[in-house]
Length: 399
Image 1 (tube, rainbow, N blue to C red):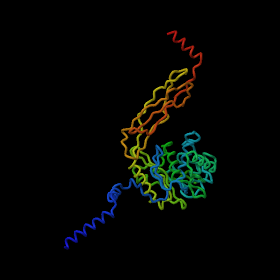
Image 2: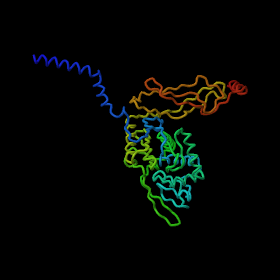
Image 3: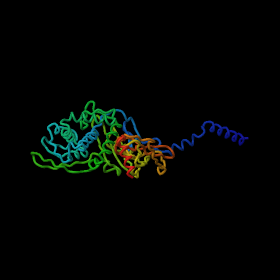
């Protein structure tokens, strides 16, 4: 009898367990344990962060990305961008000599202790900014390029608008705490992307670990050692830059760039509690990005065929691609299955202007279009007139 009752009780307990456990719940828990961090995303302690792939601008992760916060010396990403803009335009040269003003020499915070009247080259000041985060060097360069820091800051804000930095307002060129001097993690990623993709030579400067500069003043000559404020340069094997920053208002910030297997990432961290935390967050973001990203770049685009032209002085027009093609995958697709095809305009009638779109090269993955590159007219073709047709007819008769 006892055995019978025990058996019945066991059946009742088993039935209750079945009713209490929804179908699939155990399996769901097991699956959650197996998915790990990739599906949940990286765990970042800082209140604001962004992870961007540089070549495409794709955002891979964001956390409170659009809140405007003080950026501290990460401001200098924009300062360096304008320095390189001025070099590219021919306004200044790396070997130009810059004289330090009283105002530039008065800057506090991180500095290289430039003295009024001291002369340094643009390249040396660029090293001071990128390596040692020198506030005095920033102001010296701002004055050299635009005549005053105020005018330079105005240009910084104009450049920010051009890049779509919607939550940014610069008040100075070095990032010292000032009312209204703010930007966001997303905006920092945007200006960092512009700097490293347009001027990749920035890495030659921000990857310097230690270097000496020479002060030559009325007091004589002395050496001053620059040491990189970005510890990832030595501690993270894929690091390529870019800029750190910290103040009382901003906390600890960094725009960290890194490259692995052709994938270049930008990790932005704002308002971290301490220096160690910002670098840990940056590495967490970068490792996450490298774990989920694979990049396809068409290295064999070749040259597009000439396009047929109707009613023109020429029957064909030379063509060129509008740019290169890259595709970022985060889903683990087989990028070897990417196919490309050419689609030309059915009818191209003269006149044709150089730069007119005459077709495109289309990229597809598993039958789905993933992007395209325009094919442009590489030259202009005028519309044929009566005299042109007459000349053609005469040429044919001569044959």
